Picture 1 (cartoon, rainbow, N blue to C red):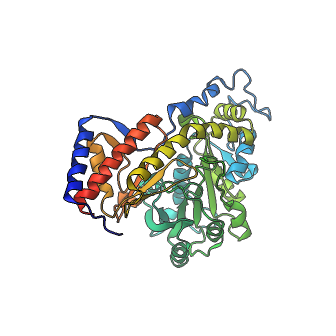
Picture 2 (cartoon, helix red, strand yellow; picture 1 turned 60 degrees about the vertical axis):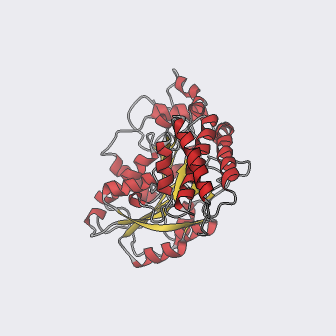
Picture 3 (cartoon, helix red, strand yellow; picture 1 turned 135 degrees about the vertical axis):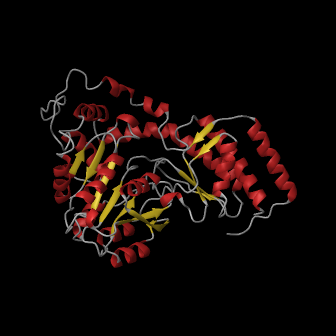
Length: 418
């Protein structure tokens, strides 16, 4: 990266500005991508549902046990957005992360379709981790003893030359984490070519899995939403029908603590999953699924509901972009993502400065996601990536927080001599 030349006067000015910031005694938070209270209020009507009518469309008594696959009417609503036929989709509890965790845990304990043995019996099990990426994906692997192998992200998705080489030569690599649309945290959308290559690439492991976390399938910030190719049919066409596991949820659509999660997969994978599920539960919360189906009504209903979300959060993203552009438009080594959807903005700073910016921000009362969280084991080798999450605070606080981050970054640049 090109060096930033800062004069001693600039450094003194930056220090004085920072000291004035600290003296304000503010407390602001840009850490996690949570919906704001105003976003949650959009779904308040759900708290009155399903009312006295607790029968699903097929006559199921939603109060009772049973139906591991979840209610058909809700699966129909989300089949299109997730790119999974309703008959290949399971509606579960409130957390897609729980489904991802359990998928890896079940594969460790029970052979998946295409496997000759349980993953726990393998001498080594590894997953590819596109970076920067989602820290909770990494935590699942770290918790379960699965090694993480970083691969770089490009504007079109994971670096497929690297991915294809690694999976072709190493049978211990059993999977890859993917957020294909508005990827966390960069906001990019996988290109059609990337999706096709993931679906069709030769792998040394016959039981290789693509963990397709479609978390932001309907979370658009513009009138021209990005799109991503559907992985399931492409994998089936390539002869790898069992390769993808598709995940999604309503957690950032309706109520984050009371949503519905989905798992989509091939028939063989679903049969494997449901057999494991029988030992864990007698059925999901169908009352919650029923209230979702009645509240959202249809694919069009989901789109209209998400338009109202966009009205609340798009100005926050615009505020971050505006403040960063006003302060660093011509600063070498400083750049940021401009996502068309999702929940995050990635701020890239000169190598070695991310941790310092986060430290300065914390001392001034601004909580940021720890530097390194976007990489396996919390270690960004370049110490250059900071994930910003502008959705949760009110707009005025977002503007104040990102202005404070700008002060911290100016001081970090000045004192580093770059």
